[in-house]
Length: 169
Image (cartoon, rainbow, N blue to C red; front, side, top):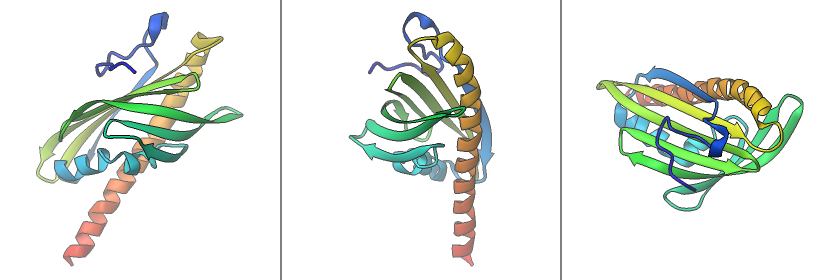
């Protein structure tokens, strides 16, 4: 797999992939958010449809994901590769499997000692017959996946806040 700079993802001559972005804040220190977001097993299990993550090495993993488009569903093994790992700042990855190509970025920014801003990008593309038409469907699906994934991440991080508060009592 080739490294794709953040925001510059593209597959072959078909152009750039449909892309979604979300920016949100969490009331946790940067270090705590980084620790969670850089744990591929932890984050991978929150990805909608993810049935498991197999870590191959420090940069590569295989995500077993149930992908649905309307009434159609398929289990896909996405081979992922970390392209950027800047501690406490940025994670970027690319992945592909079974005519699905994806990439994503997570950028973290310290707002205060106990508040972190998270910027999340997700891109996806399908290949094969009618790829241009499929990208319209993929763009809508990405919005849905992003919304669920961000909700899962925020709930998990907020749960850490509750646990920390209970330990202090």
